[in-house]
Length: 470
Image (tube, rainbow, N blue to C red; front, top):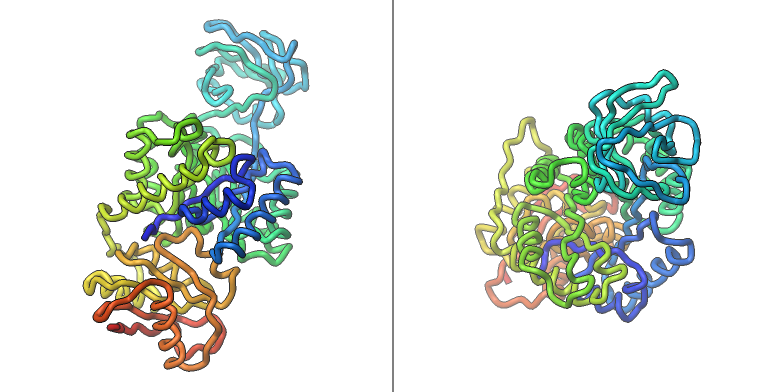
């Protein structure tokens, strides 16, 4: 049974009930809506399709909204493009001008104030590179063209290692975050997070709409984000290793090790980690993955990732269902080979829930338990257990579908809505029944039950573990 969660970006290739239903059966857990590309009609279609597929499959498929994020781009150009010739100079100016081969403008003039001599500006995802050689009197900068090429209108720019003076949340992002709040979003992926203040700014918007329950996944896409990783993880619900843009800012050979670092730091703080970008890129056109892609996915899973993400493979690819199926097969196989280091070097006193979670997972692993059943009012208990990556699946008995969906990115967690019961005996009896309904059980099979008892229908500290032999 697959434990690694799969996020599928939804687009023309996958936004119909029949295809999405098959994707869910193949292993899809979360539907991603990318605000950078989706129109109002497309967003509504995805939401409606997901709701129909939930009814058909009985699965608590979550919705993740992905923001556009702060953008640094060049302005409009003469004849829509200019040629940058290696060795020549070009000015980056604050005025809003039509760009030529001598000078270009940018969409955030204030960002130029952050530039210093020696800074490198990457244009169009790193295809071209210019270096600042002087700061000009008028506030602009003069640059030398290191790698040339043809530059088009409004192409992305990045400056590795420099935190630019650009507002993190644009007016468009505010509208998009509001949309996520008002349209049953379960997760919000914030693009280009650089500091914890970026996350806190987004949380203020969630508060305005009473949606603090909307889980924030911070996308790490810059060296500044890497430098502030610990503080970002602390205020986020999870991290996404966004290897596309991050791979522009850091040497590509460093990516695998940064990926592993982010996964480990998320585990240390009990947060989820999603690995994304080009995981099955070849399957946009081919029905089978490359051997390198198989190894890439297996590396992420064995490193401890909670979830993996598909982008263009399922939005416009020719084989969305087959792609999810291959992803699920690769993940499940890799899970059986992962090195499970459960015990952490806790640097301070841990709470009762964490202590119980440690005992639950240790017992389940030693007894080769078939299943862990966690009765949880908020999902907190299930998250603590999931972070320890037990060998068996976790069935989270939740009070409503919203709590179920909030666990859609947690490794190994399957969910079921279960009525709130008042006594410990009733809860334990119901947990055993749910376990038997969830998966076939044989005599002598072991299940480990946990939760907060007595159950009063409110959030309560986990205080009980029971081992049950069928």
